[in-house]
Length: 421
Image 1: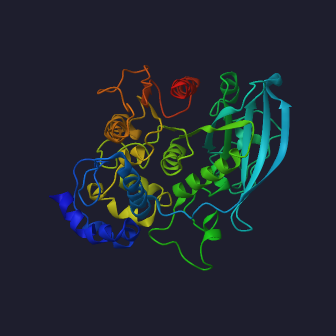
Image 2: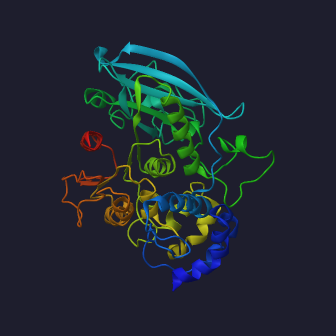
Image 3: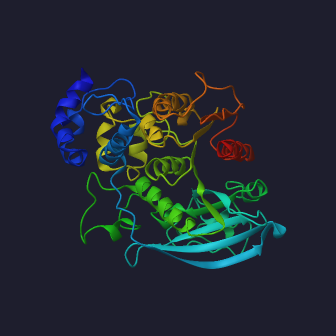
């Protein structure tokens, strides 16, 4: 009944073609209440998909719903991406790897560049898969290496060694292990990362990052314009533009990973960019891999109050009743189908709602099975410390909101198994 109400609202637009729907979608307070997570296989007009060739239309519909109601609409990919290798050390980790720093330019002149740090295994005899992800406090914090360039953009003072919102040498190596470069190299994987503030500093201001370079002069941020997480995800795709040109990287085995808010971003990038082979959002929680409708952990009002710049203005209208959302995070996971997704969590991080994330995986599995993939091969959440490495994977360990060697082992075990398939 409630879904039928929504169907009547948008039926005319659907009949005219999905491209018209975004303009016809109702305001948040006009949307019907949907108690459960929306079914990823049911179109807005209430029709259930029956043939696999109908999935692209539903996937496109879901994308526009997420853009309209949650993340905002990012600009299309630029026509060209330019890059410059700033430094290279082929004898890194005692000769096991090559360290490379690459500046990636895109879009209009003056747009802030991406400063990509890469470590690639040597002597594989073939191109390597890569784990790509954003970092919180600058490339220089991830390795104890005085040659890595410091960020020159705004930095939060909570980051190690930052003074006056600027990075300093005091932060070098302060977050070693967050990206486990040497371990990944030993497992045959490259790692690529950049500071998310290269694209957009994590502050409630849409004038100090990428946003002003892709809108009309003097224009203000609108309710459906791309917000911070959408910008970061778009930036990951620009890094992929470069990785596709790097002959040391196997561009059919690109893994996008992120922790916490960067995990929310990784999932959005993987859902929207089909060049991503595997998606690993780690402890991504509300606005990422846990359902917006869940009563457990961080709620929409919490996240929109603390971080008003992460999601588009329209999303804030659901603070008091997320049940009016015509989508939920199960649908974002489903958009990755049939590509593998691994959700990882920690027992003491209930703020990220680990159980709700498992429920979202189960629901997303409908789309995977529809497309001929086994999806999630369990009905119940696996025991603590026992990874479920099915096509839709899940892992929960003891501990808190953090990144550990144990996490990286599970990430790469999952990738090994899925790539072997």
